[in-house]
Length: 189
Image (cartoon, rainbow, N blue to C red; front, side, top):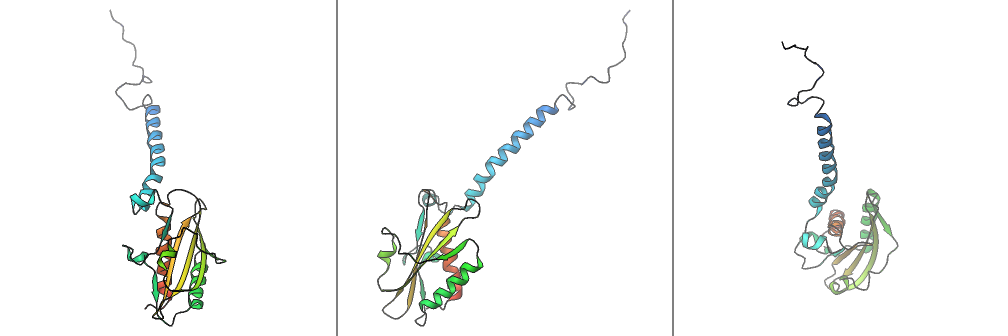
């Protein structure tokens, strides 16, 4: 005769989702969370890159009269504009943004594309530094105001990272931000 023993209520059925599968699920959840943590900066970075062919290999940008993006063309101001007006606009711009600072003016680097863009008399130069929030990288910006033959003032700018091979599009963004702010504060042609 076969004896029947009372059922063991503490045994775990292998088909259930009870305690036997919990460590496995915990490992899987941990793996998924780690993967998301590692991939999220890559996704965020990808959202910031505007031009994949440029932003990974170039660490500078400059305004150009014939730039395809109108936001990266030099700013042409009305004839009554002068260097002190631009200086006040730059001071206001830098004081409103903690990541920007107006520094003693320096000449653009010898290999700057600004030299080929300027055809008139240089009236004034300015220099700014933009510091990134997270990594504290510094980008140098040079502005040059030239007086055109017709009396108008044209402002050229260049932004260059101090370190790195690619800027992930930060230097063009620097130029767009700066030129848009100047455009809002100064009389246009």
